[in-house]
Length: 362
Ligand SMILES: C[S@@+](CC[C@H](N)C(=O)[O-])C[C@H]1O[C@@H](n2cnc3c(N)ncnc32)[C@H](O)[C@@H]1O
Image 1 (cartoon, rainbow, N blue to C red):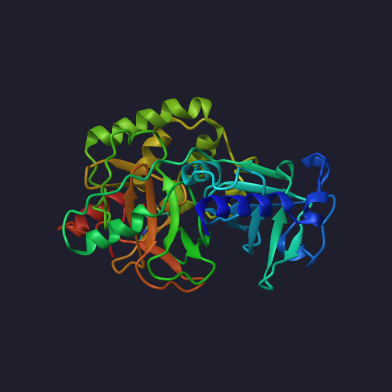
Image 2 (cartoon, rainbow, N blue to C red):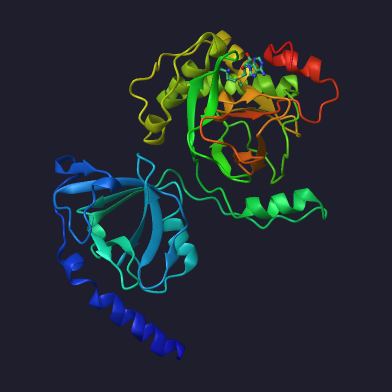
């Protein structure tokens, strides 16, 4: 088929639409719609006066419509096909900037349509039925120059495909038997999976380069970067309630048994959290016990990743891609297993380095 014919065909298909979906225009405001989950959907039925919220977990693909997968707060996933959002055959760049993993998607009056291949997916032809909340603008993923032909090269190739938004994966925070609170898997996680993608707290990594950190190289940040981060956090908390909530939650880590609810955090719901101002002394303690230094001696503090405890033989590691840090599975991790990292991988005097976190034996 010639390009022109192909375009015409696409345009025809697009304008023809799905009659049920085309008629399904929801003009009710979000507050007046009942919130439902993927499990509540009924096949071949328009769920009138309801809204389904989910997080986009795949990149979009464009055929006639735009298809991608969303996951709801029950961790069920479904494919969504939306039509008439963008002209047929819009440039990929435009599409990637509109819809990317991490976006929160609201679908008014969801309609579970049976496709010609027998599968079911949510179909929508009315752009006003779709609410797209972008967590942040996607970063441009630059091709990374492979430095050698070893493991790093493979690691780089994998990473380049990935992070454009924060993501908290199949994780839950629970109290451990002996190391305070810790990060756990609530589902089986396959080796190589990006379990959590996070930016470090405090804007201290403006000079971060596109490098890969296969392991954490101890808490060896220089005094400069650590005190720089402390100062940043003291100032930044003034206008940032969520940052205060996160810092309060990290303070006095091991002494606490209250575990932040990741489900709530996914929805950016921090309203039950302590958002009081955090003193400079508290910030010093938080950074000391929860931050990790990178190869460039930069000091990184996280929220979710900082709940990962140390192990000599960990099942995960931290890698960095630009402004994002990725907690990556080193092997298959079973549901309910604790997710651990080696705080001092690559350091000669492990014992001494571990004392930075108050860890006296491995
Ligand atoms: C990055 S935080 C980890 C989360 C922390 N357990 C909490 O409850 O908030 C690091 C702190 O956890 C504790 N910790 C982590 N791994 C440990 C280990 N293998 N043995 C003993 N304590 C550990 C230490 O107190 C350390 O300062």
